[in-house]
Length: 275
Image (tube, rainbow, N blue to C red):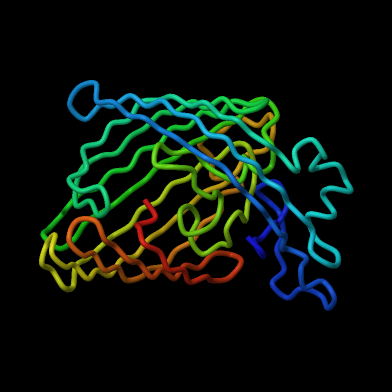
């Protein structure tokens, strides 16, 4: 990744879109990541599944020319040499409940998961709940709650993602978490995330072709080392927006999303729902 963002650690890191002259890379880094991941799930009964898996990966952050947040945090010791570059080996286990009618584009059902992962020097515990309710033929309401805590000494690369049985995703900020903010805008070992979304079909031939308009509202924040992840309004960041989605058959989906937060706005394109 040649120009991903890095804005510092914590839930109150500042961002100035009008960077001073000569600091064009102030919020940017160069990141190289490689790895492999394997997961096995087995049905226990009905929609309940057990999960086990593991992964290995290596992440290396490199500074770009000029002054940057990464350079500043390295010099201050906020990011230590033992965590960048970082080679990780992770084992994970958990339970998944999935009653969604269709995985890629659900109209109804529940998806819940509880996961524990053991990495090199840290433990990650994740809880997630997603619900989908079809109020009328064309209107689906989707909601999500997510919570994650990390103990031990997790590296910054692990803090930038949230675990999921479907694979880790960048948090906090970006199209999978806090839309309207840049990827990885807020970084910390603890995470709290909630979203609600209304999806309405303007072209409606279910499971053949569905053209939808949607609106959303996201809230989330990160917690620092030693901080307990708790329900709170303090330090919470929010964003809102909407977009258009095209679903074809049962497995193909495209989305165009525009979101706005306190940093400004962002438009993203993807091949899946945010959740």
